[in-house]
Image 1 (spheres, rainbow, N blue to C red):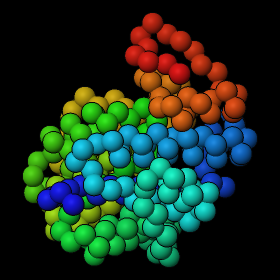
Image 2: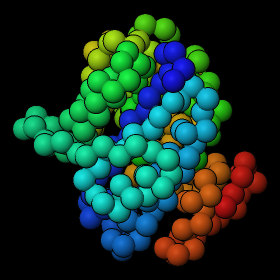
Image 3: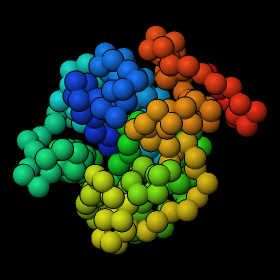
Length: 229
């Protein structure tokens, strides 16, 4: 293992709870397909980053776990939720982070959203290099209120995730440094139809592009497109 290597953690809900904000556009089985495809693109991009030594996916869903394993990720079982973390995301990330340090010793930690289909390895690598040493850093999402990534460039400091509505503000309030780099794919987590259209325009990964015809999602090509499915 490389000294001070980064270990990434991604938490994924059960597929039957997937992307409820797209329920008016996609049937449940299509939302599940999309979640798996976006996860595949996110994990594939993260694994390709030289600084990242491992990617761990925390999930209670066996289908998600199977996919994560085929992509080369480590699968960590979802722990019991706490009353203060009804969604389970922060508990899952903390439990996986603790397990990683128990297994590997003092390592840097990165929490990523699971739905970053336009993520580029060079963006993520640049963010890891740009972040200040000895601090927690946050990448605010494209909407300006959520957290796309939380990075601890300190091998002993806690991850201390505060994901959920308004998470960027909470992370900054607990000492995380806001990073201002130009990383559009890293910032573009997909919650709405407009988000997915923007990811397609920006250039979604191969898995997301491949699933779009199956779920009946229209692809509109614009002149400003960098790369389109």
